[in-house]
Image (cartoon, rainbow, N blue to C red; front, side):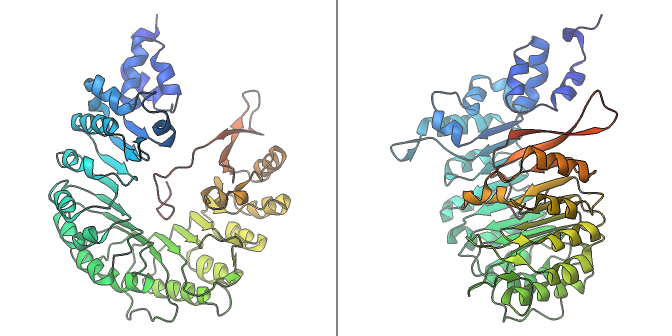
Length: 464
């Protein structure tokens, strides 16, 4: 007779791989067999966020748990620190000690993220991690601290530097040279000290780079990036911020034949137009020039993200850009389109859904009204699986992110768009289509649950 205790451990681990959150510790309490099967997944990711920091030390941190049970450290693969508890305006020293001691035990660590300006205490312990492949840090470091990082973690594949200071940017070429054999993705976010000369010195040493994302660096715009990508001919993903529309792009255009993901952060010195991508506005000139420039390589984009500076009154995407530049050149290959902090009118949504024959994910501002027209526009797609209200990414103006989806409108949407399986609302609730066990097909019923905004992935990175 098969019981819980004699079920193969591999089978249990496979079952529990579909669980997450509070379900995992709950299952671990059922029996010793369940406990043994849950532990590898339960400790695979050590996440510490603001809600945990507020309750510390009343609630034990995952790092303290590792220190108490060092045998669990072998399962840790990813560490994500998004907040730190503080004492008298300083980071809690007890917590930092717990973290460093736990990290010293995690010899199989492959990914480390620290989005808080508190990375220096972890430098020494990370230098000894031979398995570390993915590193994202708040790079406000001294020259000595940065030099230690350059000397360690030589097998980094994905490097993300947030808010990097001039010390880090000064050593960026040296760092790139140290990890050139392994690095495939370089992301630099909000580094005002980065300039074209430093970036070129780094990219010269990275001919095999596959992903380049430079966003929020005021001295490096799309002209700078497109002038340097000849050093990285194998790029498959590119993110950049736009600049002055009067600057000419380099000729001849560098080859971007392998490019499949493009993200643009629309930034202009002057007041932006009401329409983005139409007429003779600065936005139109830049968008047209970029797409014309990359067209020389004939890339087949599968993912496109466009973000406009967050304002009270977002601009509207003009049909001209969508029809001629986006759909006209890439409609047959695009699977993901994200239009953030800008409106797309019904004819634009209809054109995207009707012309992008492989569209699977769409991120747009879902209108609070005219849900029937919006649903009708979506029905032009037979492949759309995921709809995301881009208001969910808006943290500066939450009043624009209120609940604009009702149960009735979701029922109608799922019934009309047969391929749609999930909708993420502006209030960050997730609505999913579910199958009724008493029915032969999907019903129009939905379930909704709160979802936590994730800071783990930048908005401009390729979607999963």
